[in-house]
Amino acid sequence: MAIEYWRNRDRYYRLIGSRCQNCGDEFFPPVYRCRGCGSEKIVDKEMPKSGKIVTYTRLHEPLPGFEAQAPFYLAVVELKNGARVLSQVVDSPDESVKTGARVKATVRRMKVDGESGQIIYGYKFVVDR
Amino acid sequence: MHLMQSKERAAIRGYGAYLPYYRLPTTEIARVWKGGGSGPNVEKAVASMDEDTVTMALEAARLAMKMSETKELGAVFVGTESKPYAVKPTSTIVAQALGQHHTLAADLEFACKAGTEAIQVITGLVGSGMIDAGLAIGMDTAQGRPGDDLEYTAASGGAAYVIGRKDKKAIGVIDCSTSFVSDTGDFWRRAHERYPRHLSRFTGEPAYFYHIENSVRTLFKETGHVPSDFKYAVFHQPNPRFPVEVATRLGFTMEQIKTGLLNPTIGNTYAGSSPIGLAAVLDEASPGDKILLASFGSGAGSDAFCIEVTDGITRTRGVNPTVKSIMSRTSKIDYSTYSKFRDKLQK
Image (cartoon, each protein chain N blue to C red):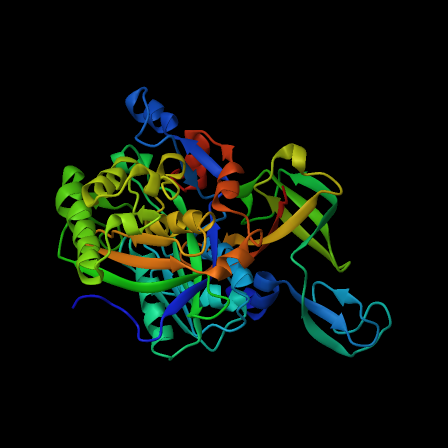
């Protein structure tokens, strides 16, 4: 697990996605071919760190490795450039987590690789109050 | 001469503070362990279960980088006693997340004064011309054994500073500093131990007071400064009482220390304690103000600094949330939630 995350650490720490040099569309997670115009002229691009909640749910039965954090909010966040990210929303009062709420990115512990394995860090979002 | 002063002065170019969202009232700790009452502080800041020194250091660092308008760092130093790994640097994770690779990176440890050590080392690197700018962070998720006196105050948080050359972006010139250390066993944590141990009353007179008084009096003696030269003073804050007592002994007034005195509502953020106190002062300081900063680290030692605020401070207003505003966005938790967040429950 640690190697897979290590290869993508800039994606998880810095929200590195893709920008199409042909049409200017931006994507997260990164793509090899533009979903808009089909061009393969793709470069890395750091995504904006703020956006708004498009939709969300409160998860009570999470995937293995996330049990201790349950219940938690999982949301589709639309960043300021239009790219969409699926992410946890943390440290936010229940009444603040709603469609349209402004959020900002943070980096948190995602999970730990077993008893003595590495700590996996990645992006989550917080409602911007 | 014991004064540390770089030939070319270094300056703070940007700073960022971080406190977690959650607060544990000390009445909760007293309720569980003593049947009532409270601790010396009202509340303490508690990191969430998905936060640690890496994540909090990064939050503060991003704010400091934004304020400083600095693109490249020659050093990233994290002062902490709560590294997530015994072996694997916190600083490299922070550097990676900032996109900084051509940089020195190291974790510094000296109990509660590791953050100011980072400031001193980067001041030297900048002052000697070896680097243009560096990042010094003091951050901790402080540990306190359940039921121990330390649990009332041991808190999470800290601050980050980008230090660079003294130019028009400078917001505070680091004029000079002093350090004073001795082998003093007031507080320690052995390898593989989860919580630190301390010698109760021994942490005061021969530790905190002896070392801070020596570092500050040395600075006074060798610069000619007197307490009234300083608009503000910030001391390490293990509890609400010690910084007030040491300030009084050294000739400072409550008016000079109240802005940076955060312990009553956030607790002791260890290596982050005096750095976040300094951030609260910089939020309100004006050009020309002098600030005395004095840390204390068990084991033991103290660093004292003379910092002079410069015109660049005016460009930083409104760039980042102030320490006051960060302190106002909180949610209270009970002892059970705190136990879950800080992994005090063993399944």
